[in-house]
Structure formats: C-alpha cells, structure tokens
Amino acid sequence: MSKPYPYFISLDEAVGICHQNTITPTIEVIPITSALNRVVADDVVAKVDDPGFDNSSMDGFAVIYSDTTEPPVNLTIVGSSNAGTGQLNTIKSGEAVRIMTGGPLPTGADSIIPIELCDVDNNVVTLNESSKPNYVRKQGENFAKQQTLFSTGEVMTPEKIALCAAAGVANLTVFSKLKIAIISTGDELKNLDESLDFGQIYESNSYGIEALVEVYGHEPIRYPSVVDDIDILRRNLEHAAKNYDCIITSGGVSMGDRDFVRIIMEQEGEIKFWRIKMRPGSPPLFGSWQGTPIFGLPGNPVSSHVVFRALVGKWLSSCTKSVDSVSKYTNAILDQDVKTQQDFTTFRRVELFDHQGELYARLKGHQGSGNIAGIAMSDGLTKILPNQNGKKGETCRIILL
Image 1: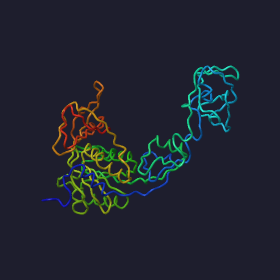
Image 2 (image 1 turned 90 degrees about the horizontal axis):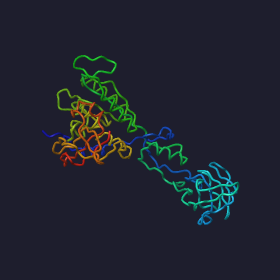
Image 3 (image 1 turned 180 degrees about the vertical axis):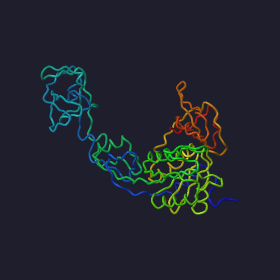
Image 4 (image 1 turned 30 degrees about the vertical axis):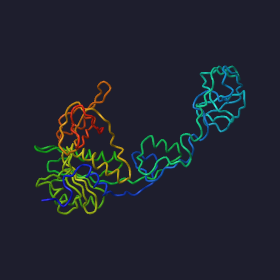
C-alpha cells in the first residue's frame, strides 16, 4: 500500500522538502564577543576607513620617490612619525622623516625606504636603493567607511569578528539561536551515571547531536532518554513542542512494532517524508508535531550522525538564510572499491593519506552503523552519489570530520 507521504526518496528530494518547511528565528543584537558561529541577520557596515590614513608598512624613512631614483642619495632627517602619533609631519624635496610601521605618512611623502637599506649619520640618511611606493598603506585600501562587510546569512568566524572590531563595529544583529530539543528513545539505553545490566548500553546519540547543534550555532536541550512507551514518548514530545523550536529524536523510526516515534507520528503527527535512499541512515523521518518541526533520526549512532550532517545541518542553515559552513569538503582518490547500492547516496568512513602528491581515501574500520568508534577515528565520509560506482581509482567527494 502506498504511503500518504513521500516514502523512500533520494537525499536531494529529502533536503528539498526540508528547505520548503523551514522556520524563521527571531533576531537580536549581541556584542561581537559573543558572535562566534552566529549568523548575521542584517548588513554589517564599516564605521571607519581602514587604514584610516596613509601609513607605512615598514620601519624606515618616508620620502619623496622622485628624490630616490638614482641612489645613493643623501636626505636631511626633519622629524619622526610613530604609530599612534597625533601630529602629521610635512616634508619637501631633499628631506626625509623617520617612520615606524603604522606611522602616518607625512604630507608630501609618497614612498618608504626600509631602515635596512639606509645608513644614518646624525641628521642625514643615505638611501642605498630607490624607495618603495608600495610600502605605503593607502587610506581605505582594506575597506571604506559605509562599506558593507557582511550580509544576511554570513556565519561569524574568528577572522570575521576581528574584521568587525577593526571596522569599529561593536554589536551585531544576528538570528537568535534556535532552541532544539533532543530526545533519545530505547529500552536498552542507560545514563552515564548508571551501571549496565546485560543487554543495556550507554546512551550516546544525544551527546553527539547536542555537540552538532552547538557547532551550527544553536542551543540544544537534551532530554533524559525515553523508554519504548508511546504514552511517555507523547508527553515528552508535547513538552518539547510547547517549549522549543525544533525536536530531534533518536531511535524508533524504522519498521518494527516498537518503533514508536514512527508509529506516533503516523497516528498523531504530520510526516513530510519517511526513509531516504542513503547508506547508512535510511530510516529517518521529517515532519511536524503539534506545529513544531521534528526530525526522527535512526538509533544507530553512526546513522544518526551521518543523517544530521547530510540533512539536519542543511535545514538549520536554510532557516538562517546561510550556507552550511560547518561541512567542509575535499576530493580524494579511492584506494579501494567502496560498496554502494544503486540509486543510493553512500557515506563510508575513511582515512586520508598522501601518495606521490595525491590525496587518497581508504576505508577506516568496520563500517557497521553501530560502530561510533569508526567515525570518531576517521578523517572523513565519502559522499558517493547515486550515479557513481565507488570503484578504486575514482575521485570521490569527502566530507571532512
């Protein structure tokens, strides 16, 4: 019997459906000291020129270039210019001003001679080479006052934060962090402060998902794991839907009689799609619970991690009109055949190595979807598309971990 929602679809189709069902966070103003990994919600405009005045990029002497074209040349030292000085010197032909890196360029000067190319005797400097006009940092050459530095959707990095400070920007308008509830399910799961009985395992998925949410710049709220009881699950989902912006569950989305996340979503929620043609991680669902977006991730730890990177992270980025800046890619040559499945996108754990100047990838560890050690100790994940074969010698896209 056909499903009343898209079923067993391609990864691209799943991403597309998610992007059609985004939410828009509120915006807030924060200091740049709190801006790491935050997403800009309005243009960031420079308040000053950079540099704010012509200055020297070297320690040496500020001179007039036409005086220096036939070295050696003797010039009279008529002053000095240091970084931070509040007074501007003036020179005329035949004169030089001693200048430090960052010092304002004197009026009339257009060139710098580095100190190591000079000989100094009292108030006379001998230039042994021609001076260098390119050692002058021109006002506004890095950016100009009122120039737009960043636009909506830019993710703030340490370098971008430093640029804001240089531009006199102390506060940023950013998208507020989405509050994301994380609920792991399963009778076998135990908390880290509990001892294990036979058949039980420590719950780990919520910790990995929590860290991924934080990397994407949002706020995770990790619930205690939920046993396989549909009433308890319902209460947790209702609480999460009332208090948070999005729900991510782990486990309970496959085809079994005790996969209660899938069952309760079929009976009481709204499913946008279920199951994706990807390996590992084919069982996920996406939909809405009482108006709140919900991702149901697989219970196997590798699957939950891979689905987050392939799907949830891209949805989070689309909510803030940004690109997925977390996922970094490279290309590598496959060192061995990688098992693929027709029409599926294949993510396999690999280690990267250099061979004769070329980057290669080989499978790392056991590839079972329950082996979290394999992904934790790998360099990346293959992203072999449905129309690729994964054969030794092929160039493959790698998601760096």
